[in-house]
Length: 322
Image (cartoon, rainbow, N blue to C red; front, side, top):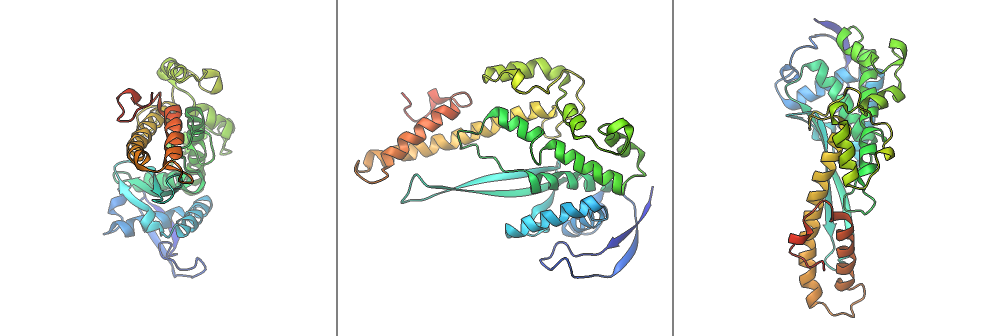
């Protein structure tokens, strides 16, 4: 199936102003061909996906916001978006330490948006809208802070600002504006709309993201293992799961729990190694030195135990937590 579309060739991947105008061309595009066949380089292919996405009013807003955020981070969209085995937003938290101030830590984040290299063009465009919504709206988490809780992480992942609910609704807005002749994708989005119309319902979308199906009982047990009453996440249900995480192959609340455990285990492993280094410094440092290494070591050890006793094997740590 081929659809005739008009592309305003705005060079989105450069640092030039959006106000700069380019010649308008009419292009016949097969949206059902693999997107990796759109051009001869990945940069050109990504550029073409963006050109398609901005034909949607909502898609244009997403791209403009993503470009602005990337610019603030010293990047272009071609730096931000690359092909990958699955579509996802990968955010890496970087920690920088001061030699003279062991208590001072600077946190920075580095984001990459991957677009599944095996998708058809139409699905790559929709995945791009989805992942860019995460990128522009979601607040990066910090597993090194005490208030980084499992309950908050699950809710943030599913229903928080820039979470899965927001991203799917964003994707469906693009479907209704740009691919309204695609009956399959329109029908999927109508499942989260009011009375089968094109008026999307956030409440209904949220309800369907919390459907766990056969995972319902095990998920409640897992919450209990972390001292979280299932009533704290009241929207979960045992209805058949509708939305499945491509990264984990599980409903999103279950996937969020697994991701949280992975994140915390790695963060605690990193802290364990840092504590080992601080222990050596604390043994050598004079006790009278201002914000002493001993004080930092004690505070960090307390935080480590509070955050990591459930997720990390403290008994086999190289540090002494007795």
